Length: 282
Image (cartoon, rainbow, N blue to C red; front, side, top):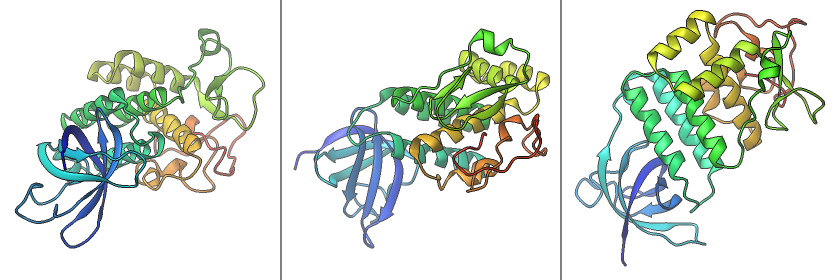
């Protein structure tokens, strides 16, 4: 059986037997590939003792489109990110990113920009970059390249008199008028922080300016996109509560996007409001 080499990230794996694994690989050229790696857990062989979650390597694959499992014949490890083993919150952020890739990217549908975005995010975290800013940038990349791009507010909306904007998960962005379904209140400062993060990246200087003028805005921007991803997926994400517990569960607060900091109590023009999971804001 001929095997072709693919630059790949392992985003999920299961034990198949004492010596084998079933893996979900996100390949730069081939997209998501689910495959069986027979003998991958042997100490000696073509896999170097197994394929670890969120490791990058060259995968020898015989891809079988239309079948449940392709054949995974060899693995050459190229990159690991030790911070995922030593920093709990970076580990949780990376698991969330891997989880949503598996839910929004279709099998065998290449998304080179998303692959590069995940590698960039892992590199940023390894280098000590902001967790929330990197989550926001990656989720934006993923949504944009899988047909779920988020509509940003217009300058007129940002310059309005209200402290809050309305975000419609049904319409996929900020709205200024009537819309189908519930909307979330989002602070204007949160929207401005999101625009700045996307325009300037996650440089230390940019983040310092944002946080000094509006503490907690980076976290709120990331929570907004994480909540929207959940609505796009249509179910609770098991990796979401660990990173952003404030927006997880069946009874999340509708005013989370208005929280001035990750730990402060919620505030809104009308006070505390408890709503079903389909209407929380991050």
